[in-house]
Image 1 (cartoon, rainbow, N blue to C red):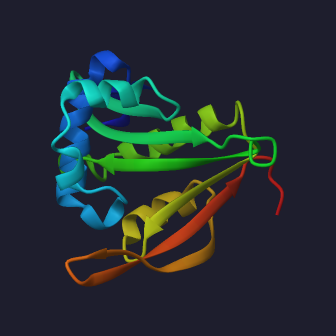
Image 2: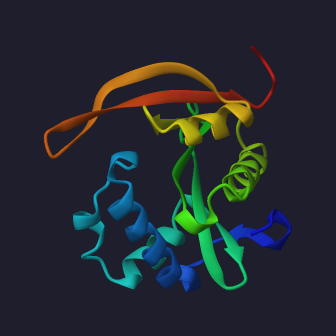
Length: 171
């Protein structure tokens, strides 16, 4: 898979079935990477996912042909004291599309979108996910904290690394 054959675009409510499939795959195969759970979201019909795609979180999809290879969300904070920042959320690239530049294209597209409305972009990545950490570092994110025991799955705790990128280039 080459990055030239990949189209990045916002997912619309009409894409709800494709989004539901990849979202549930992400929750099933990488439960430690998401605050939600497969058991929670799998009970929802396609219409629920369509409503999410019409909401405040912008979900970008990476398409190769008609296949949805990856997703990332961007949400801008609300309110006068927080409106200068936003967050990348729900990042997932399907196994067969990894190491092909899909993740970088998604992050770059999300950052371009974020730059239209915010100064600072934050994200959370589970400690131990080295490929994701490298991707975010290459995109200019820096670690600023660690949330110990952020998630607990089947008696095992997972720590989250907090990262941020200042879009104005300030230190």
